[in-house]
Length: 154
Image (cartoon, rainbow, N blue to C red; front, side, top):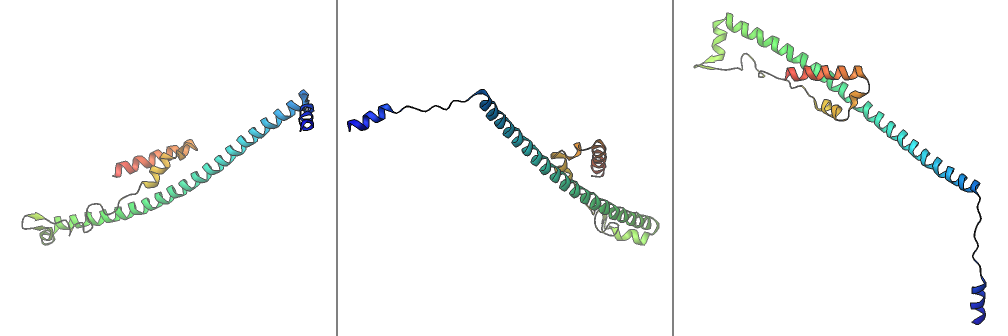
């Protein structure tokens, strides 16, 4: 055992001698790796954001188309209600159908109620939360005008 302890004492640690070029090279490699990771992360985030914006805009477009269709149906319905009101004003027999025992029945004039369609603004609210309208100033202006129209109609 004495010999083993003697060998252990004689062992010397080996130090790797590096010059400034190796340190510089490793530092540049680390910096490059970090910058590459940041670049790729930003690129993937941008792709994800673009995909999300595209999806929200498509849904918003569909919502606007659906709201327009419902608004046209609502308009036609109100035209029919106006015709019914005019008929009641000009025809006392027809007027008796909705004035019965001192109470007014809305059913003969407006069978589906005063408002028969509700406009939807669910996707609009999501689009505002995701800040989709910051893509272009024109889109922002269009979006604000659509929202004002929705508010006025409700």
